[in-house]
Image (cartoon, rainbow, N blue to C red; front, side, top):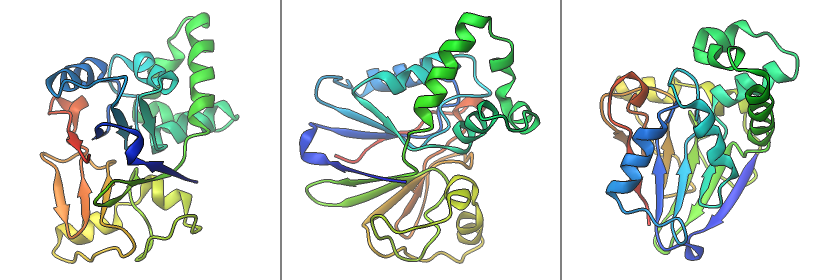
Length: 214
């Protein structure tokens, strides 16, 4: 469920919001910050594919050394379907592209989805100055502790904390300096206490948010 990253191993570290098949937007954004694949690291809040047009390219990011991701609910839907689960939910949420693939490409994507099954739900990044926690939708506890059991369902799906914050009830999560989440499409990144939400709906025609944390 958890993975820890030592920031001292990288020159710079960036975090990207939900990509959802917008591979070109990602490459354009990395170009703007002059991302160096040999020394920099890009972290993803999950939801690499679905709804967009370049889904295979986005899943292939999992094979690179400069890209790490937490698992999003869209990865989980794909994993569940490959494990024999119901297909309707994934199709209803943009997964129909997978079923339209020719056999050879479908086999490739199945292997990439199996990689996604091994992704952590939570990444802790320790930089020289701050401890960052990255998860897809939420860290469903009032205090972060590395390795602490938390609900996978809530990490992947919950909007309870964000909804409360948007209604004026925001509370700090103890145990880390900043938490970075995606999952909920917003017009612009929103910060509530020490929780930053960076899914800015790139697949719906908005900007793909990439922030630098080191």
